[in-house]
Length: 352
Image (cartoon, rainbow, N blue to C red; front, side, top):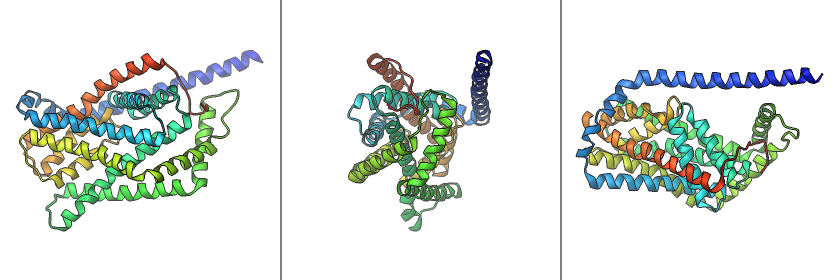
């Protein structure tokens, strides 16, 4: 009987390894095909590298400052919904997770996992970490979808908007309405969250077989939802300010890049271009939207009335500040975290 059980365990282990390998290969293939399609646009943006020296230095400084404060607002929101006092754990986990997301194929899930594991290693409860990160992420996405709403008064006042940007505005408004509706359901009805928790618990217990399976994940998720809801209700103005700061300052970084390149665009049209690109980047076809963001943003900026050469140069400068510099900061943050806390692997199925 023992040899048979050992054989079954070994077969299951090999099956998991095979499935993991298939997922990695699929992610690499999808990334490769996407890069092949958008490579000409990416190459056009990269070819503007020698012209970076022509950017106005004062506006470059504004870009770096606004992007740094934008990231700080994101971390402040996470610190609030996670109810964690340690800034060190929040900052290092956030930057490291962001860096992983931006360098690996299908890195969104891996980056979130890295951030989750780092937080739990620092002492944050596993369900608290998962719930807080999910809440912060959903608030950020809702903020992105809400951006076109702020351009509606200008459009109603006669602002000329090309069809591509107008479609992006309508898509954002619809997405915002759907997110708000889904959020309201999760916040209001325990049964929905209970079903979600039961389903996740079933998957975790199947994947991570343990002597003591997790049995109370749904109740822990509901309790965490109630804690987050209470915290947001008490500090809703701080949460709103953090979301607005994260998105608004990132947008100002783009606007500063355009001014640094010598463009003087209509800020409302640039806001639509920024919102549409940010939503497109949520689709995890390439690491951190690499190539997709460059192609989409430069093209949408041209639709917004920016001259092609300046749109390409501004896109490159913006990506340096918002994509490449944070990757380097993430690498440093990970090593600092490892130096303080060491390495640890955890699972959501294990209560802290």
